[in-house]
Length: 168
Length: 336
Image (tube, each protein chain N blue to C red):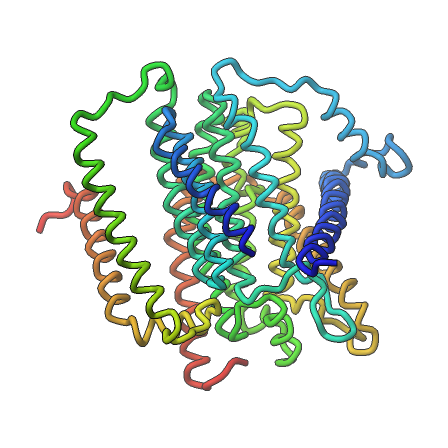
């Protein structure tokens, strides 16, 4: 099991680096697919079966397909490998600050997680029934807020796409 | 021996045997299809290779292997080479969890039986689109790109209605575990095709669209797109796409059998448990026959009609079916 963790962790990091460093946008999408697959296997090693499947269905199966859809249409015929993207200015300072902030949040999170590990309630989050139960009882407020945010996005899309027909 | 290692080795052997069986049945599915299509059109079909054309798949395989493997000069070589492998990988992954029947002691005959079974199958079908999308894009020419874009839009649209039609069955069975769904059907003494007939029809239509079969074979519409997403592919790479399409067809038939036709349930199974494998295979073959029948009978849809049908007819009907099923189960307090 621990070997599986190390393999997946290394694959996830390598594919993440590939995603941000490749010159060809479609290669970045492929890197991200590999990254999501490795993450899904990591969820499986934590007995979070349902989360692993959702990771694949929603992120790898739906969201990234749309990324690919748009990128494939925009980059056809272009030769971005030779041209390469323009370099962003002032990268060093913000990236150091963001990196330090991420390190701080991660170490704080790990400290909290490790200090609670003995007393934390053990939930069988892998099974679909427990996950659904928790989602619609304990976390129902977050669930409803997320649904509301998605609703706003849908209304926004309809408004922007059909502006000529819809006069309010 | 180390138990983890032993588990790894037995799983690898099971997977190897299963892949061999699936790929062989793909070869004979192709012959079955050509024979049936021929009979539908009053022809005889392949007859020259072996008795009754039985060696035709072997001849086709040899022909494909010996062809030259071309890569267009403008193609993205890396993606172009991995796309067919991705397609066949996701197609074969589904067989990790499909139960082919029941052992005499009541356990399922499958490599694994996770409690998220049906979600795993949906995940593999969702990821399966990358083979087509990346293959079409990486060829860097217009027909493959159009085919890939069409296929992506089609698969995303029909996946929703398919998911909703499956949820009705999950509510009746009260589980997402494939073996559990099959046992629930034999425990309730009813195959879900009867209470969920609407869902079964929607599943059938969306499964045809998901596997890019006629009348939904828009991604490779010969009259408009040459050969769609695999126009530039030749030799074994073309063959790999071909394998993926037919293996997917067997997969969706197997899922339809498990969800709606009671899996390995049938006469005399309680007396001779091994018969469950036979009933399962008979039902899968029946659904495959319907696939081929549809191809021989129906003309291809126009692209805008296909999209309108998916979003404006299938999705609302599937949602309504789900609502009625959920209300029924909630009012009764339990499944069928």
